[in-house]
Length: 303
Length: 305
Image (cartoon, rainbow over all chains, first blue to last red):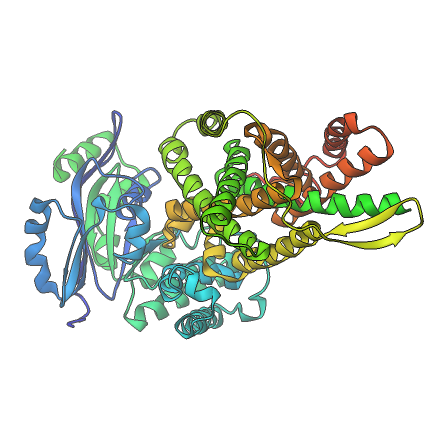
């Protein structure tokens, strides 16, 4: 299977999301490439989280297409055929193509292997740290246990699957430095550790695309640096690509390879961190500008 | 003293049955935040399934061993009640999941009425009875004018309850399915985002709740020897009381609540007035809830931010 980096992994095309009369996202198109960190930035209310909600099946977009590829990029040629046939996905020996906007959220995680975190921490507070990581491997364990029936009778396949699940959980616990707290309730961890645990839990679902909604929110500089390191090591492993919403520009500029800038639901810039940093539209959106300049910007982006 | 011991034995037996039903209430409440009033109906139907299964296997198939017969009717009752409860969830609750909060509650009351009337029409209004399965009892104490005895039925109920609770505890705490159930209980949206099929997990919860209620129903039938279409209501309400008393949402709480309710009921009947035993049960509930609004093992509600 061709797993070359920098193939297109996720393709968002002409995405529009309306809530009643409010247009939250207008005709947004961008791509996220495999093996890199793509950041989605923009001022408050720009529609970043809405994009995430569309990608992960929380919202059904009003218009547009969100496609994700596993495996060989040749399959992108089939995208229009799959769309026209009204299918959710296309599976071939060389890979698979998914139309995420047609899938319910648990299938987005299970089949398309896209997972996400939220702005606020949503760990299973009452469960232990280890259990949080095991829940994320639920499907694998359920299949191995024949929907629990075989598991109760101690089938060897289940015992092996369970051992592997725990090994994987321990791998991530070591990576986020929480191995010694594996049996504590997740809700009792300090804030920064909870943030890292969320990333680890998401990684335990074995995703190809990890969507992080402001993972550095509320972290102190040290914790923020730990998080950067964790994300860079995920990128280095090369299996999971990252799509990131972040307000903390130090995080965004340091770790992302590609940045998409949104303002009022419209894409105003798209490129490398250097290019985006110097883009006048971006500067205008972030700092605020005079009325006539707004019109200039609006004319440029085609409003 | 003898009276006390005898009532303790009777109370624990009754309490085991309440506890098994209460688990069904508390599990469904935990995962859906809904009181499933149809659960008492499922319990009653399961007793009727057991009754008919018993008649069928003893008269048609000629099973003569009572232990064998009991095991067979329990399994049949568990399977059919599970199918029934799965269907109830599918037709009466799932379509209303996204509706306003009270809708499934009202739907469950409707289901409860439906089940009661269905059994009334198909099985008749009169009490149905079975012959006692065991005729034996063990005499523990005898002081001349009062004997303390444990019947084989009571021992069966304790053994089955303990085995079942052990299996259930294992399922909830150790298996991936149990983890998924607890995850759905805490945050359904997040559970589905880590790949848990929430709808399926809820269905399985109803299946397990029904299986436990079916065991309770079969044992209720075996213990009392009679069952009628209206028998779901009072045991159902008491089991619900047990779940609230123990702290709704808490599984050990449901069992403890069941035992407490069973004991209060039998002790009150023995020492005070049998006519007022239900008053006593609900009176204690009121008092406990004044001082411990979360129930005995309930967690205080933490507002989500």
